Image 1 (cartoon, helix red, strand yellow):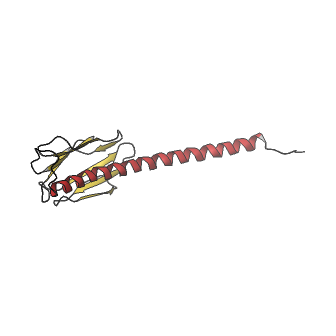
Image 2 (cartoon, rainbow, N blue to C red):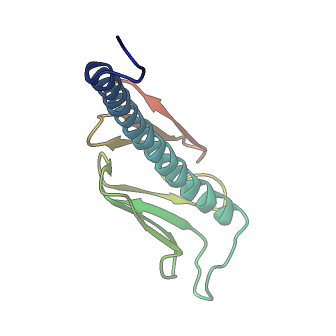
Image 3 (tube, helix red, strand yellow):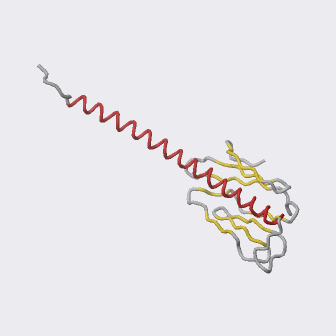
Length: 152
């Protein structure tokens, strides 16, 4: 006759279920966290372009030697916003798991972009998720999730 409580088998089944659910939750959270990091970094990168465009259009003199343009340059792991004739206004290093597909630069004049449009891919190395940052010839920046990790 049973007096109450749980048997050893019942307790082991409950512990197994809890461990399995915890493992699935942790994996899903890690993927979500990486996706959010990539989204945040691509937004921050796009914001650097927008800031350079607006500063150039407003003729914002960051230093006395300013000569009228702003350049955004990047490598696979860093990007920099530099007013012409001045030292870097913004320099940023990406987190270790996030990279840009190639190095490049664009220069903003007081009216528009000084170069042709650009397309840059930002990728999370572990999940192979990509975000595409497109800079139009007018200097407007658009960033979006990219399924196939390719620029046109």
